[in-house]
Image 1 (spheres, rainbow, N blue to C red):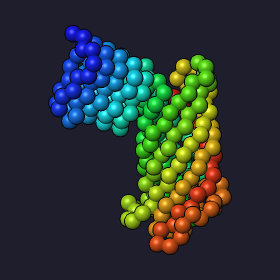
Image 2: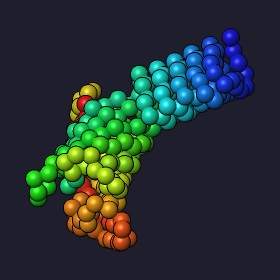
Image 3: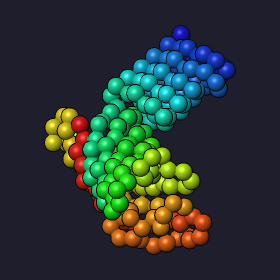
Image 4: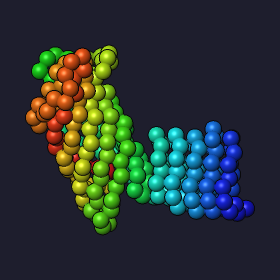
Length: 219
């Protein structure tokens, strides 16, 4: 069946072909072909021409999935490892043709005996220049932990600007610059970035901003 216009329900939406929007306010959208957008908690489509907005988005092809988990067959799905002044990082990028989500973790050496580790999540976009060359920009929120799970405010907000080059079908190198914003009431926040950076706020909570660099591989 073909739906021309909007398909709006509270629970489950199904259609073979929709020309417009599937909206399930508290449920799931399922369609083979979507010439438009899917908005719901869970979105499933074989081919989606525009946006999927939900917690979980699944598609064979989707231009712009926005969610916590994006599984797109012809999209971005990379395991990455990179190094920076903020430590050794690893993460997953999952998304569509131009938008992706990223889940990351990191370890950073410290001057004391406590092991610093971070977990984070963010969102980004990709511009493909050619089959091999691409540009990525993303923003990641990290929870910073020294030893055990840190109490109070202790985070690193990191915006990355990267260029990547695909050497083989499943292998690329990438590098770039980053802007670090450290927000903490645990310490002075001066141990991230190439330089201590500028203090934007002091008092109960310190906010400090500084530059960074990164270099990594993607498979």
